[in-house]
Length: 424
Image 1: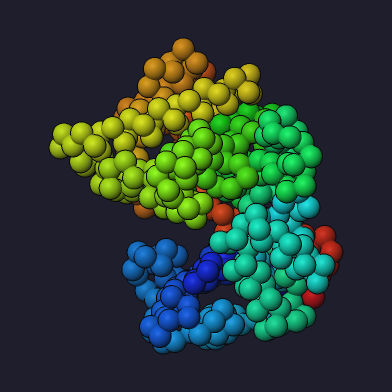
Image 2: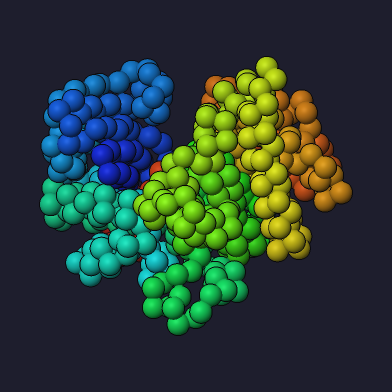
């Protein structure tokens, strides 16, 4: 039997998201989420093949379990049971591997890796660079290995797409010895999304990624931009952590570093309090009390001044990065909007490019505002006018598919029997 399936696992601090894919065509066979791990009222939502939606929040056909999942081990065992009920458990010979999202790979990991004990030790060593994410990612891998020690486990890192940045883009202008000792540099995040979207944008243009320069704008509650030259990232907005860069739902993005010193000295805030302020009480929510762009736009349309200012600040920062990355690339073939806001907010797309016509950047109002519904909602589309010098695209991201593809490519290299072209 051919091993042509990959299970993608994204372990958070109190949740596990998963998707089972058939790699011969990229189709979704099952998906779901376990929430509130460690609480008495944990919940598992499972969407089998044929369910109306793979988004756990969207309703449709599903199975639900509400019970206590004490830890990630219990949660993943429950996921395995649900998959087995669909005839696709972790011992299914059609399952080629499990691909795990890991947020931080530092400078060590420049691509996906088969997990062994040395890989686990290195992911653990990187915890100080991603204390909120890597521990949970690590727990998910360890738990999955215990459930089926013979099944290949692959770690796919958010940072790897950005490891191609030249040193002059990755370095901060601080003392080199201090930076090296404490691993202080720009790493970038959302890498699987930027990789997937830049490649899909090239496909949309009918060109090879090696021939295309793309500015990718991943705009969700977290937001980041990247400059991609010939399929390789040469700059990105997030840095040592996901705090740097664009204005986000609850994160400030770029601020003068001296703001931290000022708040510690003058406001008497502790470093942890400043950290919480900049990561959880800033951005759009700090400016106007909302981090949902739909609600902000509703308030703007009703004349709410705080919402209007928050929107203007968001757009101003976004426009600055578009211009900066245009300068970095020199020649731009496309600007691609993706993630929740990028894919669904026509006002954000039009405002971000307003006034940039001299750079060849503009949207066609009809195309930009036309709602994407049905199966076409997940298909990339052009929203710039015919003949525009730079294509403006809306490209729905699919980080799970990207993780699965990287996972499958790696295990196929190491085990030819995992390739659909080879029988098992």
